[in-house]
Image 1: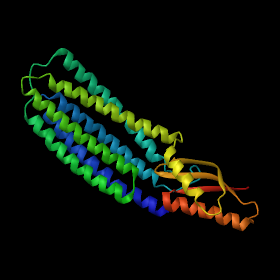
Image 2: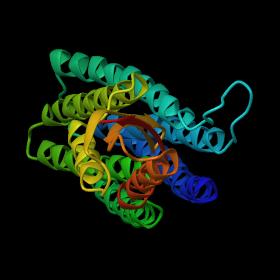
Image 3: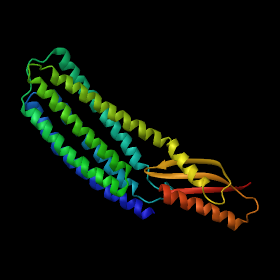
Length: 289
């Protein structure tokens, strides 16, 4: 089990590295063209990709740290390093998102008389197409290795592609004697950056404070109750270590069972949760009833 989990994290690095390379190239192109073409929307999109570079690097570091085995200081392993990395990246994204908003609002309030060059729109559309291809790669990789982190990266890739399309549309609109539409689009991009940062922070903070999906716990409970020998469930709890679920359950068994028979029931519970729900570790406590 451990070896498979570590191998998945290793493969997940490929998606992070591809994202870093794509974001690096696109941010350089967008920022360069944005300044030359006088497009606030494209510059905002380029800054968004710059934060994505940092975020992807942080995620890559988190994936590497998560692969470290358990030691004296971390008896449960380093799985949560990936979650901490995601939270750090959310802070970075929020700072840049606020910066983009301030600059865009300033431009809107001061007024913009000159429309951006149409090449900015072409750059945005080409960038969107490139990022969509990265999204497809990471999506397939995430499904193949069953990685929530890579899946989150894929969704971020898709979000970036949509932002680029939005920026391009704003730039195109500015060509029809509506120069204010470009900075307004930059405001929307800034809001999207901040919103994405907030969602990442919300999910990671929920994970780090041992929050867990109630529906998934209900699914665990249903599986345990269907096991022969389990008369009832006194308590069931779950928490996450990175992408790994750890379950603690107290089951009730017939008081006439001997120690070996009760242990066999507990083993069935562990096996069922691991095989059916891909639970990483299960702690079963047996009480007579």
